[in-house]
Image (cartoon, rainbow, N blue to C red; front, side, top):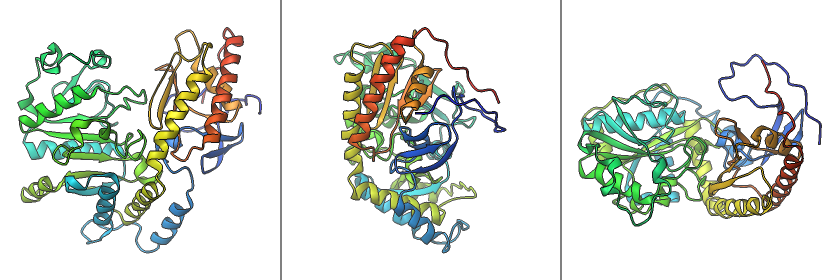
Length: 420
């Protein structure tokens, strides 16, 4: 592999955590990215967690070429079948048919969550919302952390993650102060937790969703990151038994990330009975890009491929194999203190005395790009569902070598962050 390149300045407004090295991409195809500095890399992050089929999937490219000349973007007043056909295909493929949903399609995950919360507020005539303090919902002022305590109840669930199975949530003092009658909805994000994979326990989700519904509130599931096979199910909420029966399905589901395999399309699914109420009350939500034909066509092709090729189940199997092989690779070595994951949503926690940046760079030199969080002291692998068994074996071998190197060079200075 190539040696560490010089850090080169750029003119982007980089409102994100810097890498310890420079990375210049020239091409992305399948599960690989070709870079100037490190050559060919296996992309263990699916772009920005958004390409479950890998990069430049030929059928997605064909769909773009076929649909774009017909209609790229149109005013929402035109009657088109694209959005309705996408909703039907998505519900059939993912097991949501029993919920009888209507859908609308937008452009970003933040927009989808914001629209879902707005609908819940207007349908219930309430403005307070319930969420957990580990849930990332979006970047706009109405959603971003720290959320406004006058509008949100952010339940601290850090102590709930390892709560004993015999304890009852209705007896927990943490919930004593919540008046569920004041809340429009419980906004549930099934375990991404800002890229940390901290999954709320099923009994807590069951309790909160039941209490919200008993008092006339709605359950909103934020599947922007956890949807489309990322957790080994079509949707992350499907790991929670209290939300999978036909009458128990979420009232609203916010979609994003994997829906377009990197193309910017998101969506909101709403139970048809609630959609009728919204129309009767003349609720108006207008943005420039609603149900755009091109986005809907791409999303429908993504849904078709995921279902036809069995990629959701495949991602679950390969993700489990990845975790098992990482556990074996780190055996007896310092550098990773914990492996957490569901399906192809995985993180490798780095202990405080070790350097995630150094481990990240060591893996780059061996041909693997991972997510890096210096804030949370971890590496992240949200790989495409198309990751091969050979690539998993190659990664685990590279990780073992990198951990051995970390043990030998643990006291060497960390590679400096680039300065723009």
